[in-house]
Length: 81
Image (cartoon, rainbow, N blue to C red; front, top):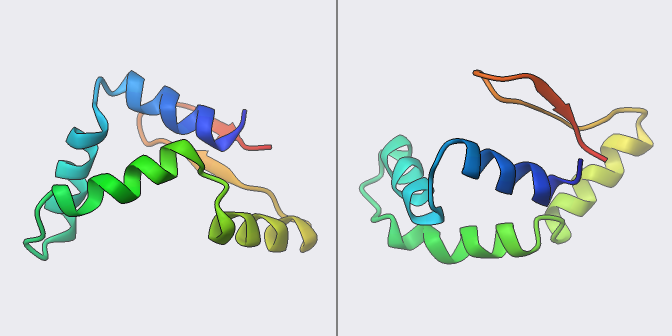
């Protein structure tokens, strides 16, 4: 499963919108920043999750013989391609 598919599927499973996700992150962040400060960044992540930073991390992990996993705490682990 590709990262963008995994993220979108998880968001759907949780019944959340990207704005609701931003609200949750803002709450967990604890800095007092409003959810709107996260929405633009999150939209870019969902549109192109393999942006430059992620792609670099992915390449390094794979070159070192590793793999990327997402482990949701309330469901099974998914391998990412």
